[in-house]
Image (tube, rainbow, N blue to C red; front, top):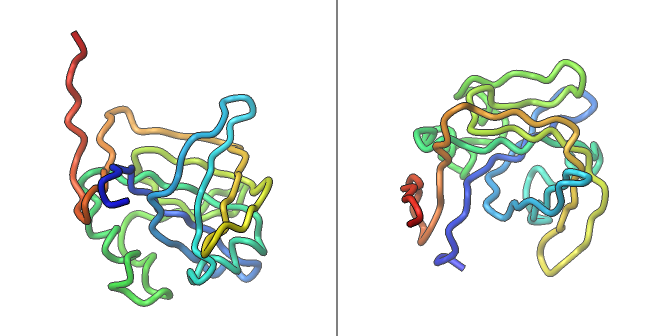
Length: 155
C-alpha cells in the first residue's frame, strides 16, 4: 500500500461541548459529483472515531505541500488535546466545524452512510460546502514520505 501515492488530508470534527478532534487521512477519495460525495476511511481505534460517528459531521482539510508541521502534530507526535495549537485553525460559523484556514481545499461534510470493513469504518460523506486555494500544491504521501506533486504536461 505504501506504493500508492495519496493526497494528505486532516479529518476534523468537534463534539457537543466544542472539543476538537482530528486525524491524518490518506484514504480519502471523490465518489460522485451529483450529489458531491467523498469516501473517507477511519480506523475504529482512532481517537477521532467515536466523536466523529456521534457528531455525523466533519471537515476534510487537504494539506498544502509546506504544512509538514501540521501533519506531524496530527501524526501522533503531539497529544490529542494540543494538536490544534499549530496552524491557522478556525471554526465554520454555520456548521460549527474546525478547519485549517490555509488548506489546499476544504470539504465540509455530513456523514451519509458508514460501512464497517476490517479495522476501519468506510464513511460516505455528503459535501455541504467546498473551498479551494488558487494554486494547486497538495501534499502527497508515498512510500512513507511526504512530498509535492510535480505536474507534467501531456503531449
